[in-house]
Image (cartoon, rainbow, N blue to C red; front, side, top):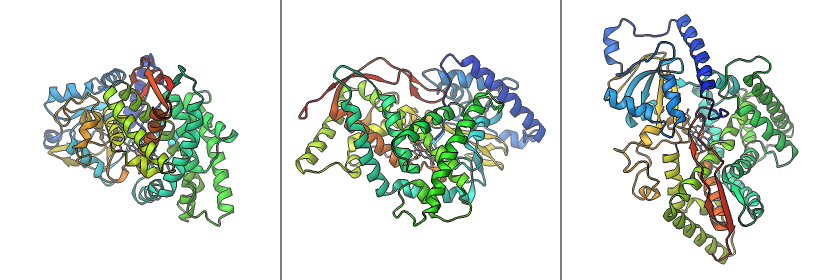
Length: 490
Ligand code: HEM
């Protein structure tokens, strides 16, 4: 859900280097104090380590990793080492930790399927500070399974999907009709604004209005601190983000208290707060609930809007795919209009070519490039040792762009999914195992609805824009398209 974080401008490499330097030094000191670096002197264990190099003292290979991450080909870092070491699993030293990097689908699947007895999540310090100890992204064991199960079941529910579909229609139709012919529509901006409001309603039940606007502003302030210097002094980026989080938490905790007070329990639950308080567990405190609601806003502001924007970018560059997607959506709209019905969530999800477009966008776009875990014991997989205390970086991006798994991997080719199996472990945009993204259906649904309304409302000519991959994936100019309204039977 969180790949790296938001907020660094492109020329911020120098800033990034300083950030990394400080993070590295502090991590290194912490590791030294804890006596980390297991395996030393143990020749047998060393022989089982994956091949590779720790790079420079202190910084390891982080600077090269970051410099590739800023380029149009972030996977170059992994691809180069993969060739050099003759292995898709190699060791490195990244972000202050000895790390095993895997671009091997089988090893990646193994790590994703493992639980907290082998690996726990690892995130940079600023991120863990901001997310808080009770974030679903950080908790483990029974509590993680409980929160995941509760919100996951709600996100899959027909009730929420119907509500979200109606909300998207209500919000998108007037928004799109406000763009006169030949005007510029910035897809990323529109997608962020629409998706945030709609998902926030599904999470905490807040309606559009003044409080929603305040929440949006505070959330912007919060999200830019996710990857900042881990210093909490007044005036620092992290401090400002923490202050914004406090304000959001106050609002959400007030909503929770009000809901608890009139606890004739909303049935079926109207939002994720209803679900979590309805569970009745003492572990699900107001603080845990509000922390998690804030974390769940990250995909609403970031991942889902970026998925939509990337799809528009790739479609604009592939007229044949755009044409097929338009045809599929226009036919559905006509069919439903003839029957005097409005589109339901099941209609959008049944559009097979539209789903292939979304799948291919996830593969090629790599919104979450990979995930980090830390080994809590020595783990051996496919003959490679991952020593206790080391990180493992499961790099989805290299797997998704591997030419032994995908023909012409850099080509946007939605048709490949007519035949291809998504569940063979070489396609993991939503992770896997116990932490498989519980919002994956919602992400697909929102993208389908947005694309439907866009292609049935407009023709467009895309302006020049390009993808930035670090610290989060996004379009540099927000994907401007010059739109012309379609006649009804176009
Ligand atoms: C394109 C959109 C999205 C992408 C690419 C995405 C990707 C991911 C990935 C890769 C993970 C696994 C993280 C890990 O293993 O450490 C994850 C976890 C998660 N995602 Fe998403 N996600 C998306 C949308 C959403 C949405 C819409 C929601 C809900 C509103 C959501 C909620 C979550 C949660 C709660 C987790 C943590 C699960 C756990 O650790 O138990 N995501 N997501």
